[in-house]
Image (tube, rainbow, N blue to C red):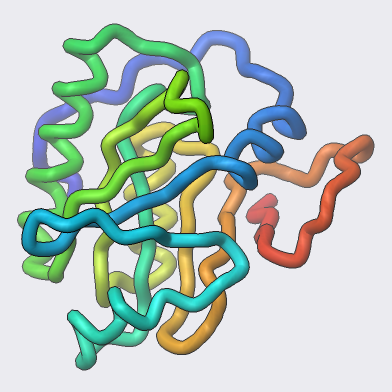
Length: 166
């Protein structure tokens, strides 16, 4: 995995984790199949996507755009996305195009949903591409936000669909 030769850019500084997590919780997530876009909702199952891959047990959505939600140039983001696409292709697993966006579309990030990847490999790939937040679920379970950070002490939000990884 991660043979693409892409090198993660340095991430200088960061935005407040709590504010970012809140924006991830209210974001719109969609995935594509046969030219149609389908909703993916945190805290809900994704049976339509699961029906496309009946042989797998795990699903995850990740991106390579804007590591830690710090705005990078279009060319840096496209290069990172191409590298992630190559890395996903090398796995031999099923994956499809997806995206995440702010409800008002002021922020949009192309993403990928991968089916059948072990959570350890998924987390490693996400960290390699500098992602703070991803979505993960097991077949028949609810889609959950995975945050590669510790829960901020002042975070005041329903956490029923969040996994804090540190």
